[in-house]
Length: 141
Image (tube, rainbow, N blue to C red; front, side, top):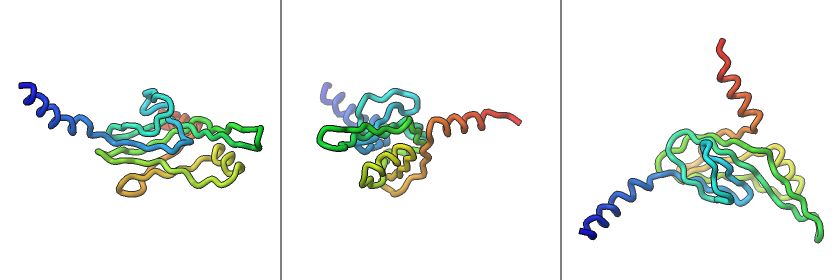
């Protein structure tokens, strides 16, 4: 009887784990996925199918010289895209070659999102841009 139950559970597990995933680069942290808090320092996030809104933050520690460091971070960023099925998604940053490029990226980040099938349409918004869209959408004429 235990063997039969175990076999039934094994057959059902693939159906229970059908979810998309998002892989984040080491300098991007997810704070929330669709309003739900994310445990600190997760580099892989499970996603359900449908519209995703992720609160992200970019952070990098720069070594200025042997004794001095600078912590550079962005304001909260909001990434939105449509996740489908069991796709694996990867958030990609441009190659940042200098401290100046890192600081500029933190001020004006641009990322790309890819899946196994290729580029994915997405939007990256700051908090003020997101709030402006919400206000604009709620205004009735």
